[in-house]
Image 1 (cartoon, helix red, strand yellow):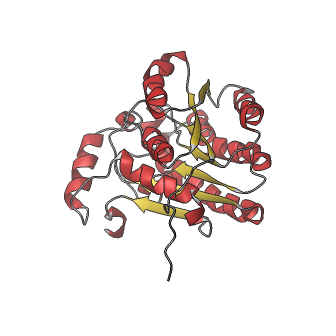
Image 2 (cartoon, one colour):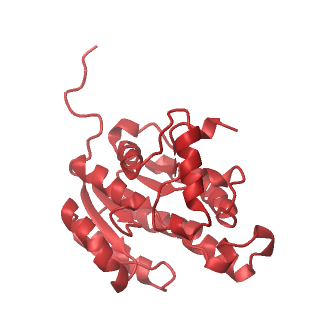
Length: 261
């Protein structure tokens, strides 16, 4: 058998949009670094002017071509972002959705007690925005592409203090499967990446998250915690032609913790 001379994860010439960089320690930053290392051309978003100061050092260090503000709760902002993608690039090859939000009072309380408004907001930002992005990306992926979102195993089993985000992430994973089925005939693949616990700013909103990190590192089969580079390596592979026959998956990158009860 003749082995290919080109690298397996090759994103040279591919155009990717990264949504969800909060700072250098965020999962989206780890994915952006892996995309860049594989040769992709990248754009990224920042939540607002306050967040931009934390995002700019990351985007500049990675040579990201351009950035734009994005708060999916703001009417018209997501549509404007994709109009910019079309104007600047004329198309899109892959997209990472790495945003989630729930009001603190709903996130830190029981699911039983969550408010209708808090539940709706969590679903809108964390799940429905992925559907909106898929719809806007579809016409820009005329030659196929890859859509990826970020989930967590609290979607399928009860994780103490994960609370409202458990049902929300379950909905996100189901959404990824349905999008994969609907967009597959157009060559658009869809995945949900499921990292183990990682110390990010988003995770800081969860009660006693440090304990969860410690348990994950101590109990996982490889006795190590995962980091954003591990997630990035998987994300880059999924966006590459090497993964062209893989779609509709929820893929754990959690040092094997998902196999434990």
